[in-house]
Length: 109
Length: 119
Image: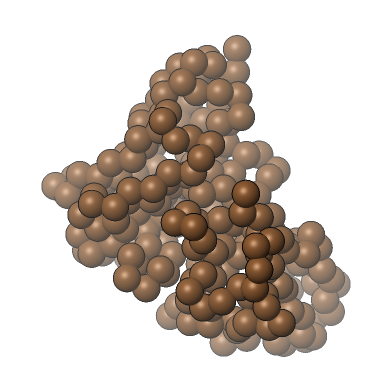
């Protein structure tokens, strides 16, 4: 069974930098797993932030960036804003199926 | 403006059936794949099913395989999810999502429709 693991929760100060990671139980995450990242604010539908590891959508704020880091997919927020407080989900394409991670609850405090 | 509007969610008994619809506008429907994702109340996201731009490639999560069927209608620019043999664990918000099949890029999300399976 494919399992994608994220940090359950992280806390960051306004203006700070934080990195969220996304790990695959079968081995290192690579570019052909096509990592996507999504943000879900409380009471709202998710919205797409990053695709194909590091590609931003036209609406993605510049402070969000994606990468591969130490065998994991990573989402880095630089210069965190209060409105970035949300749940963040990564997603991988593996074995012909899309698999979501359990999500990271990011608190801005 | 891209719009995806889900409908068809309701309360249903275990073993029952529902058909969800997702009406789309604001983009060229024929160019994009469509997916359904669900989220149980207070829980994370779970991929349910995807269909590519012409219906030639379809995938299902193991949890719904054999019970759910995804389809799309070019003329109505809509995607559907036929859900049979519903179980309590199918209770969730169901979102439809567009994706770029060639770039593996997930794009726009609808606001979701709630399915409740309970006796």
